[in-house]
Length: 535
Image (cartoon, one colour):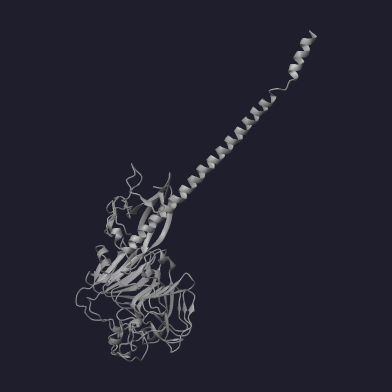
């Protein structure tokens, strides 16, 4: 009995097999750690892959916008092809599609990204108003591609793996509104010489670098002049002393002439270049006419012959006088599409008269305008736009003044005070006379507008004559074929106005309705944002 008990006690003390148990336990715990580590690593790998695909999809979407910009700058009319064929020359996939809003099976064609076969993009030019889903090239039609400011909206969707992202971009052409000051040629219009009986040399309508005659009347940026915004001239800059160009480095100061700037006083100037100088840039060419604006004017807003418009403050109305339409200070609503056009009504073959008495035939497309506007507008004329008082904006609106010939500031002088070559006496504003048809000269004029004189200049009538008129303030932009004078004098003015020209930075993104672009301008990215969720 005792032996049996001792045998059992010995068996209980035997440790054989415990090592195996501990080994199995440790292996189990180790396996759990390994599984946990693998699970964590595998989750991170999936998250990393998702993050990489998401970034690759966004990069593909951006590449789609860059592709569309590239094609536009190869062919300004590329957008009119809408979706185009499914396959391009060489067998490449055409990534440009009709609009798709995510209903049903995705019909879009995607182009694979070079260097990343897992990423691709598809493009959809978006009509201004959808439906219809497919684009209509006519810029004046419902569903057209270009909005009233000439902007084109394109949507690009990028894919990579299971990730998809969409961006929407607004594209615009480089235009006159990108600059406070634009000129094709930095010289006075030859029409002005000829009208004064001086006789302009025949080769004044050429760039200085191409041999403009030294006898041509060039205008100099004087020591105290300041261009408070971006500048572009297809010519070069003629300056004296230290005029200021630009407000900061964001303002481009561009010349197409590689010489950039020349001395107008016999010595090289020392300009104060606050903006960023760029020389030898491509020229921007004026459209020959503004007939495209006439095409979009609504019935009842194309007037013929001399027209007077007074924009009514705080309303969307105007007073209109036009003999051909039987209107005498008639109250009219502003046009719903923001376009007013004045056309000739026959019998208007006279050139601009530098001895200006405001006696053009009634059929001439001269539009006189002043007042306060509470809606974005474009007022265009086949001949001249004449500002005969302040033009001010009321609210976040923009105005365009576009003339085939001159945009002018009204300034009558006493009829016997000057001839074509001489001037004596004061202007009617100083004398108190009211001999001109529409009243005396305005002083300290303010114009809140984008001004475009396609064939000639922005000019003050009879600028060389009369007493001083104070300050001419422009809040907007000025673009002209030839540089127009607004007064005479040096450090202080002798006649006409002092200049106070200020760029309206809103014009970088917002345009007056159907404002014109240069005929050879490049397209650029205006606005860019991501659409969430992706299409």
